[in-house]
Image (cartoon, rainbow, N blue to C red; front, side, top):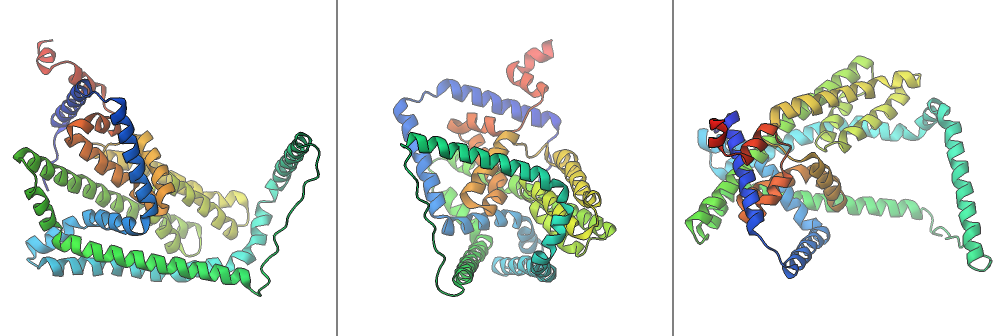
Length: 408
């Protein structure tokens, strides 16, 4: 692994990026026709990503997992001298073996909680009885507003009596259940197909990804373009793989901490809730908030009072704050900084576009976009905006030349 740059080198690099961004902004002049063409191109790309998600999403997932497995692949191939094909096969079997073992371990308790859900609704209503009156008041106010709006719309429409059309349920016995079963089968078949596509693509990326990159570099017209392509590929592999590896280790520790606290408080199936916390922590902000809500609802089924049920989600919140505000910034601040506003915007956008998998991929794709922008002159200002907050010393070094600083 290459040495981590020290503080002065990092500041000099950030200052160089800022000077480069300012110079590109001064030189670039976009006419309205170019701007309109760029907007249409971006919309066409997003349109394609949305409607071709069934084939594009597995490929993007394979690319991200390939970055995560690049270091183990290098160890197997370089140090242990295994062929690339065999190394790729060993990694894929190992990863999906671990995933299958964890899934088998948590599938039984998860199925048990799902089966007991209808019977435990009475206990949930008992614990939340204190909220019954405020909910009734909110519902009554909502009904009054709806009645007022309906009266106003009826007067504007001439006072004509509206007709309410009720859709009759399906006459076939068990029609709703059959529809639900069909949708589940279709969803399972689509998931299995996308999983097979991702595994197949991942195998070939691990086995032949280097040769593909080499061929791509060979077709670059100039030596500067070849060097730029190699730098972009190296930075993407180094930074994104480092981010994914570090986040995975941190998420494992978060999952173990939550599993321990569930065991201490006497919650059943602590392994299930630890794995849930581990998976949800991959999704920034929204994932831990969802986990806190799930922990609170499950605690209402376990503990006799609502105050006791607040203990596990409170500890979950403390673990998340310690991890998100202290551990993760301390580990990744010097290597992987992104603008928090754009991280949240990317999370919302990709979650809307591709669902849960899009939320998982939002930060790695934003990092790849920043790396590409930093190495392309036209996109350098965008890369500077996407970057994380800088210190005042770095900004000053970008404005005042280094000689003037030394003279002063």
